[in-house]
Image (cartoon, rainbow, N blue to C red; front, side, top):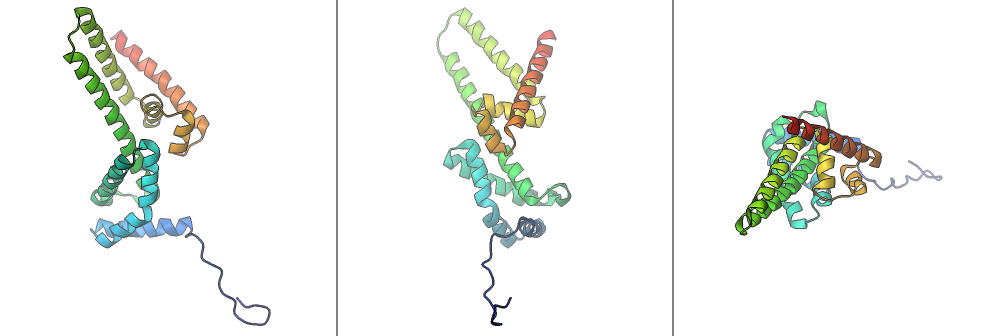
Length: 205
């Protein structure tokens, strides 16, 4: 581009890379990672690690656990690169999905661990017969709920777990999942309705 006196002007400063460019670059890197190209893997890591870690930290909050899960995500990318299908979505979407699922799995695992510790603690305390029976009923109820949760659709299960197990507000869930607040409310509502139906079916058996 030339100025008023025919002198070449300096080019405008480069801005952030367009999304399409990042997507194309990531797709090309994945093709190389399929062939066990470590340099391509390192480049992909540098490109996406901040976003992956940021998403996981929004779910787990704890920095140490978040970093651990982020490493697991990239290990999975390295191991499962051949399974990535560009026709089904972008590398970014695939990475974010892996990160979110692993973060939610950690939340669920922590919840299960707390429940197990509580059961062990209860078991080790001398109690009367009636209390034992009551604790047995609570354990059975937990198991029924866990089975019912597994039968929900993935989106509904995720929303219910984040709301009732992880303790996030609906607004926080919307921010973490990057979806409208109305969608979160619908998923939780429909998930709870389905849970009640499933639990009712179990009682009727």
